[in-house]
Image (tube, rainbow, N blue to C red; front, side, top):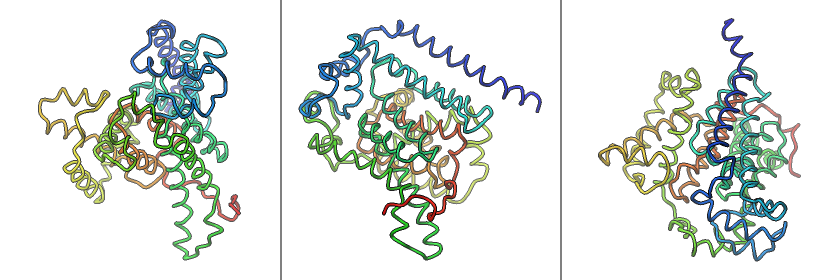
Length: 404
């Protein structure tokens, strides 16, 4: 007990040393953020320059840039170039600082004392892509930051600020719509459950700000679809390699969703076992329940019908390609996806976040880094001790704001 107490007292200092070490190493590795443009940075910077002629873009610019995701990151990077004429360095520095802010807000969280927040932040630091993308002008960090901010405000019960953050997240990447939808579903079901149990249903009570606010935030994606006259700007489909599933509004690829579940298993569930061995998947498996068998069988059937394609990008597919036979590759995907499904089998906020993201990933090319915003959110919820919370804090409908 004395050792644990001393460790808790030392944990902030140890954590500060760790983040200093990691971020200093990143700066040195990237020549203090002045290394040559890396992979998609070439395209992202070219697009950012289109927004570097003024601080406020016009409608023609918003409709005709050559990228598949919403434009806020390019507007920000372009504005930095417009103001300071050193846009690549400042864009990287901007992402670097946002990344550092998220890590510090998680690791030094005041919502929960002890060693959990620093451990969760270290888990995020070791997550694939997080640190590396923090030093490049990719769009993932800005989108992840606004999603994180949305949940930070949400856990503080600042629902309007949370919704604004989600609107900005969607303006950074279309896929971020999954997060306010997940909150809206969680809150709506939490609201309806006691009404169903008491057989007392009133429309006035249903129109509650706790689910209406994130729903409005999610609906903001409609503005972008209207602006683009589709899922993305038309020029992007002729200049960038877009999968068929993104070219067709109604096309879906369930195997991409299964691949996403496997990625979450690799990038969150397994690291969580290392950092939180007493409160993660192994403890859940020790309390084996019959529904887990149904989950395993149902997931197996999905894998048999929609086996994940081996044409993908990221670390997981590289690991799979080391295996000598196709059945072993699919078994790897299935095992990781099953770990994810069993870890989040309870219907709570984390379940809805995972479900909404998995469904939305059926519209995406299978790539590990698309899971980054979800991983950021999960480590934050783990840090403040609400990842496994089944129900939100009780707030009587009669005392909380309603929509008239």
